[in-house]
Length: 170
Image (cartoon, rainbow, N blue to C red):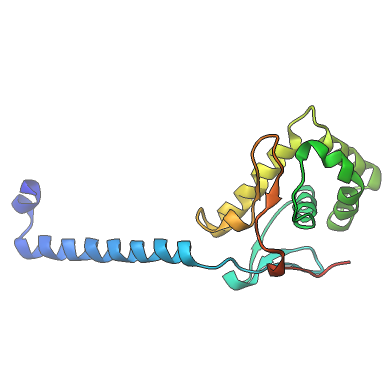
């Protein structure tokens, strides 16, 4: 305060405090708004774009393997154990086949085998990248409903209520 008094008049200091208080009040409002806001619907359209229509139709961009993995978890609201993903290999191949346009079926199966191999940690890496994509797109406070959650060796799931999920593909 002594440094400010030496360089600024009382009216300038008062004005600066008013501005800081205004910013503080707005930040509290935004923080409370984000905590109270309802999750958006999640739409996966016929082109397999992941959209959040209630958040200005924002798109979550994922590479094909991550998108296929995310769709697999969406289709299993009860959750999945990552160590048992091999049990869902056919479903993952099917989803990956629809989402990816660049790889051949043998290449896809090889990548699926890598991700479902429990001796490697590929699936955890993919789940972390999916989370980062949501955080990068909609911020730190909103993605909780959309990300794949669950502790190590625990069942992983997406918290979003399935009545908010619309899948517009075959």
